[in-house]
Image (cartoon, rainbow over all chains, first blue to last red; front, side):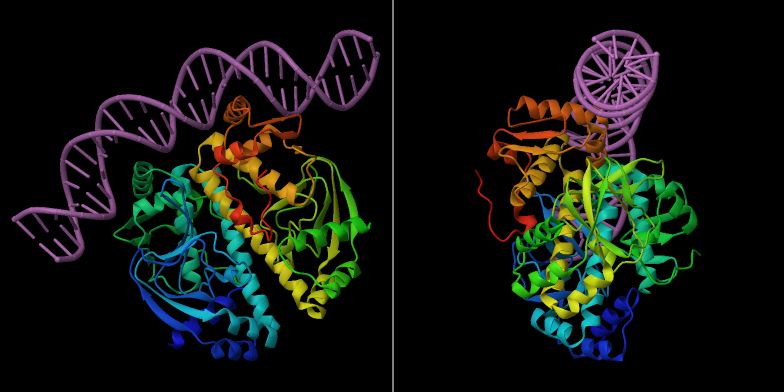
Length: 244
Length: 244
DNA sequence: CGCCTACTTGACTTACTTCAAAAACAGTGG
DNA sequence: CCACTGTTTTTGAAGTAAGTCAAGTAGGCG
């Protein structure tokens, strides 16, 4: 139960300073937890949600529905993330949210959040910053999908996810649970399933990482970072992560 | 001089409700105007700006610098836009800003904006919303560059720019000044200059639009929207634009 | 065990990139 | 006014990388 508030606070503290009052306000928020099956949508394109989602455990994805019925995944989210904070101030969802693996998601009423912002403006700024980091991640995705060759592109995504997971202490050493299918990887990176697979083979051959059965294993971080042309500056974390 | 405050208010009013107090706060902001040559940078990657930029006239672009020295353009901005509002709460710029054509840009001290948010919270929310719209545009760019074929992709960008320009009353009928070179178009859309040109030829052949010498002419809007798979919902404008 | 889904691999085709060269155009200085 | 330079746009030809299609394998689950 409290896990929800804890992961949120921990996440916000990675980029914002929260004092006791801010933390108290967060704990005062009501948060209804729901469990979702892999691939289950919990916010649809066109919805006008009255609650904000908080990833409590597992993984969540955001995607555009394409005309032909396909999907373009926009980002992946893990424990502590508020993947639809924008819903607070934008009426209709222009994209959908779904569980990637099994996920537990907390729902916080917009009304309570807005009241908390009035009582405790620094908390509002922390959430604002959260939405700005989101935007920075989107910008990087534009560059990644537009300007990098398939294997580099894939390595970059793995770097980002591993880096963010490590900040949130969600990795187990060099391993990270990433229940993303190759098909979804293709829908995120803008490549066909065949190219996804071949890129993955290349990365495996480089012996810098492995990814199979929904688990990422990072074997040589520095090398992988180089392969993926990854520079974490865009994630704007307060403390630099060890480069291992 | 006042032009700067006016275009900002006009832009914010497209998505947010501003009362007289909010407007007064905006007019109280000091704003230093500077003129820039085409292609001149005014914020660089890594900067930690103390002022926020406001496009007063002309066009401005945001881009990531690529390892090989190339650029990935992330978005284009026109009069009324605050293309680096995020700088208010994110320390270091993860991308750069430059003038596309000749542009006049106003600079508003962060301190004054932050004070205005305290005096007039709804103004802060309007700016927050502005950054959220930015993010929505980035999301669409991910999808555009990852999932759409070159001519569709190009048509989509033209649709977005024309639609946004029309909202801001920057078009002259079916015409719009867009001083973007084909090279820059390629750097925005993730295609080679050859493909840019051939896609452009195709769009010209469709007789839905023309683009030459930095001027876009929309000949058949509905048709162009269909060609570009364009749905303006993601721009979250209060009033629907006439579909002409 | 058999079915379904996800992953893997190969062969073929297509579309985009690269390379190259020419044409149009803008700006410069004679 | 006209050469001269550099840049942008246009076009063509060649090479290649990624998509499509198709078949086969491997796991997971009823």
